[in-house]
Length: 80
Image 1 (cartoon, rainbow, N blue to C red):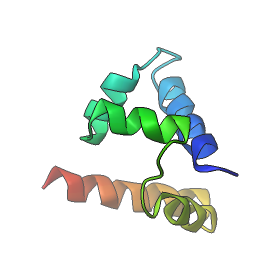
Image 2 (image 1 turned 180 degrees about the vertical axis):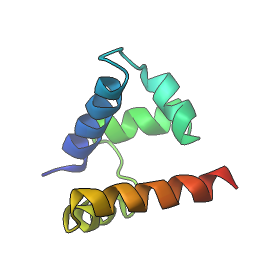
Image 3 (image 1 turned 30 degrees about the vertical axis):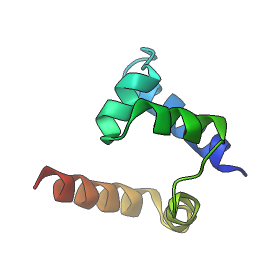
């Protein structure tokens, strides 16, 4: 699986979370706190964010409830 595939799956999952409402790359980049061009390059596979594949693979070793716990912890860190 390529990084482009991971970002497309995640982008689509976020859209599904909002009842299928399309989220522009600009809005997603804003949510992530990165420039839109950076996000576009990630989705197109032109550049790869460091460690993203490793993070996704690590999450893949966890059970669903563990993933939820980890993501909630990460989100709390971002709120500080």
